[in-house]
Length: 157
Image (cartoon, rainbow, N blue to C red; front, top):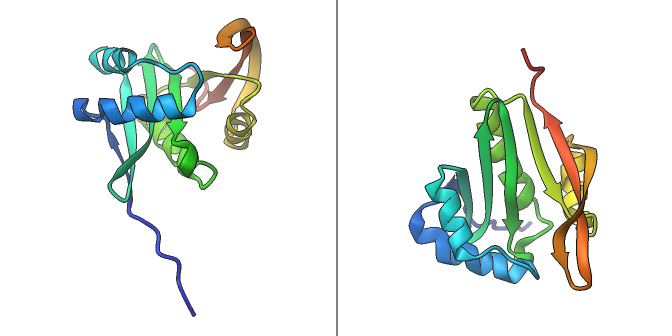
């Protein structure tokens, strides 16, 4: 009988020394990636920023802004070589946990309709579509819409 060995997984707060690795993952995962400067600006703005460390290798990240009882997931990404094994769900759960701790009532995000894996993840976690932002994302042949999703943590007072 053999048991699979899984590397140690840790989700922790992003620190400045993580920025280069985060930007590398972003550039690997997306055709139109955020710059290192955008990630740095998110940290400077105080956005809740997490990284996923798998066996000592930075493998994913999540960034969320929180204001006025609402949260907005700005970016959630797992390195393409480590996708579809549950790491995205772990990061999403960690972000939602922080939103609950911050007394947030609703969480919002945008996602490309062509990103079926992300849409499936968000829907399976209880996010619902509330709209479309036309021509939101840069795309190879013009612009791509964004699907706007929300998740209710609690009813507003």
